[in-house]
Amino acid sequence: MRSRNLGKNGPPVSVLGFGAWPIAGKMGAVAERDAVAAIRRAVDSGVTLIDTAEGYGGGLSEELVAKAVGNRRADLFIATKVSPHNWRRADLVAAAERSLRHLHTDYMDLYQVHWPSDDMDFAECMRAIDDLIQQGKIRYAGVSNFSVEQMQACLQVRHVDSLQPKYNLIARQIEDEILPFCAQQGIGVLAYAPLGQGLLTDSYDEDHVFAADDVRSGREDFTGERFRQTIRMAKQLKAYAADHGHTLIELDVAWVLAHPAMTTALIGAKSPAQVDGWIGAGDWELTPEQVREINHIVAAAGL
Image 1 (cartoon, rainbow, N blue to C red):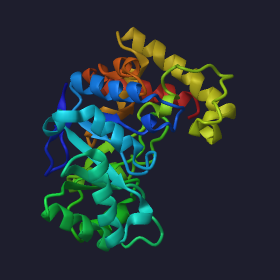
Image 2: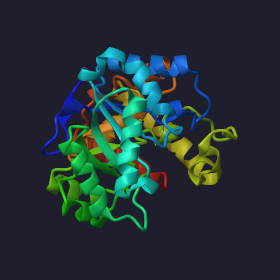
Image 3: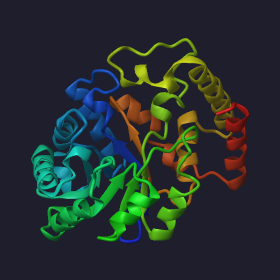
Image 4: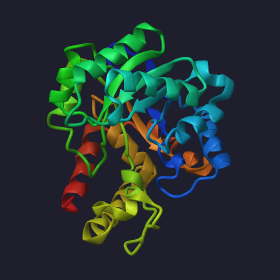
């Protein structure tokens, strides 16, 4: 599998990363054996980056990652996140220690602030993370869902090694300011939801209704006319991908990775079969013309 360096100071990581949010049951219940097997399938297939968070099931996701990784820890780049309510120094240090215990490791490769909050002191937060780096408990510092202004505040304390934003064919708000800023500052980018949390996979019909225990059931993108528009567009993109000898999922991920600021696309899976569905997605490198053609299809759909 291809790899890219994580920003200007980070190590090479795989262009596909395992996103460990779904295995915490946020998109329907997942058996432990399936979650562990999914992670192992991804690692066996060349994925080196695994992304989780303390907020994914209150540590459940981190525990499942630890069970799956076992004695392969040294070969992998494990990223986790501190929840926004734990931004104060003492709370952040305590959260980091919990994550270390959940992950059954003595260091985390990347520790990220999951979300900004209105009362967050970015300098205090970054100083605490930097101290943990000096102690050898963290290797790199990152943020998730931060604006340019918020990253600038963090940079007053130390370099930010990565940003984790939402980015896919129908969620492109970061293109105008955030991605150029990351490229300029040497901040790696780990894109989450490159498949639109299933919207861009042709897995659903227009009349699909998500189960009550699926967090997507209450989101605007997954109901009503916008949902139906997206499903119709996904079918057009599927045909375009097939004409080029690829799957729709490969198209989705290739489009995300085509942005020059991008490091890794994080993709979730609840079973080994789902991993098999996307593990080859990093091999298609789109031409500029193909990117324009794909963008045209999306624009024509009104999305």
